[in-house]
Image 1 (spheres, helix red, strand yellow):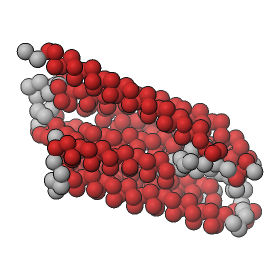
Image 2 (cartoon, chains in turn orange, yellow):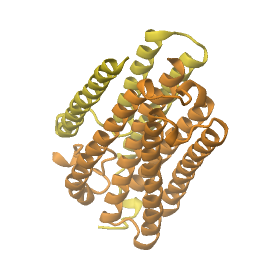
Image 3 (cartoon, each protein chain N blue to C red):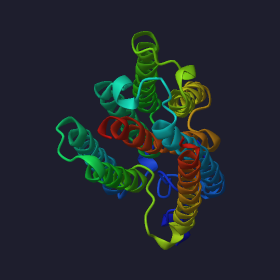
Image 4 (cartoon, rainbow over the protein chains, first blue to last red):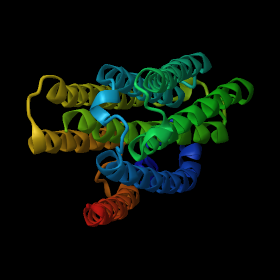
Length: 210
Length: 114
């Protein structure tokens, strides 16, 4: 029977809310297509960075001189735990529909996400003030700020979206539209963590290793 | 349609919840191991040169698959395959664009050498 099947990426509501489950297939697949096009955007920025970080250093500092791997590691953990917390928030929505539990998980997710953005801004500050590495110093640095900045901007808009969803959960409760929006936000949030894997590997680790 | 109370949920759901909960925990543990492994390669100088870059790339690929499998719940079930096909197609487009860009710009760079 189709109801027990998975219809879309992320948490499926089959079993606890068949009505929302049916409604979810179309909108979540549409959002999935958007996420794929977003991945293409990031791919182009990665390609630019890959070319620039080798050939575009000019007179400026190189990757190994400006990157702080400890900060990158902590940022990775923050985003990973944030993604995990959102997963548990979705389970609280699916099985218990408890506003308190969902809001608690959303707050934890958002707090970890905000800490991630804060740490990245601090990284930028340290790079610009202590390493003389502002975006205009070289093609490598322009590409670096563009790639990580686009990711940080995505995370920030995810935080705004999360705040809006928290208000909707309080005001409307767990109606079908609210659930579907939360499910799309979850996909967005998990996908940003997947993009970050690329950033910490190909930007930070490759930069220091090579 | 909204605000259904937990009492009318079938009992079987508790197994299901435990299973989905485990999926996230497994994903988190695997991701932590892979991330720490990747940073350890660089921090402890376990490998160098092309071997290090190859290992890091492989760890990143495995971690991306772990995230897709355990956080985004993409698997090989037939009903779910459109999503997988779409991501595989995107990866194909992505590889063509990234490798093409790197190749062309590297070639141009070599020609610009004095």
